[in-house]
Image 1 (tube, helix red, strand yellow):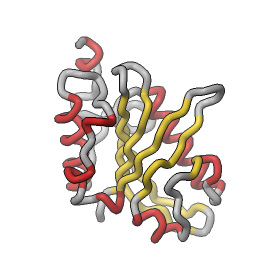
Image 2 (cartoon, helix red, strand yellow):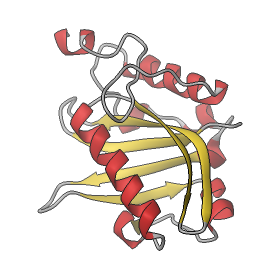
Image 3 (spheres, helix red, strand yellow):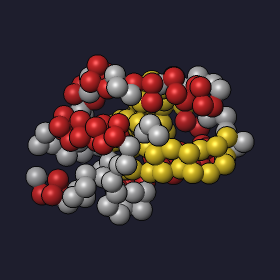
Length: 161
């Protein structure tokens, strides 16, 4: 379990790999839940995730499948209603590359790729104007793995202001 000891003492990092703390109470709770369900593993399995446990923020949760066949792609399996209200389209079931807003797409892809490289929870803050939308939120990206090695899913959560 030496790899687990290399994880940030705060349980998460920023997109550059520095120790990061979630400021939102919902994201602190989500991160604690991730650590709880992973147990002694480096990553929890998708089967460990119970949506009932996330009902406190289910509208702000997205489950993203990581596909590694050929080039890496991200499929937005389930996307909470917060995204549709914020961006005006339903993303559930779509591929990330089909996201209609190019600046948001690039930022999201960069965040997912940072998580894949860092291999631990990532806390990020957005405070910018992108594609005509104000992005002002804190988010957590949490890796999941079926074999405790290859990241097969990402849970993204948006913090409540």
